[in-house]
Length: 83
Image: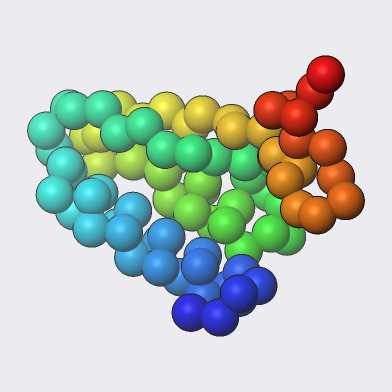
């Protein structure tokens, strides 16, 4: 997958999440995923968050955890570089 291929990354994420969903269906077990704050976003990965949110219909407890963005690219100041 090429750098910056958000659609490709989202497709890989979706395939993985669906495989977990198929395995956990009907078990009542919990799946914890990384989700977006706005599942209705145009971001391709928001469909993955919606898939996880729909696990309840398949007998899976699900939870989405939001992970804040980090800035580590050149010219930015990462949390670890604070003085």
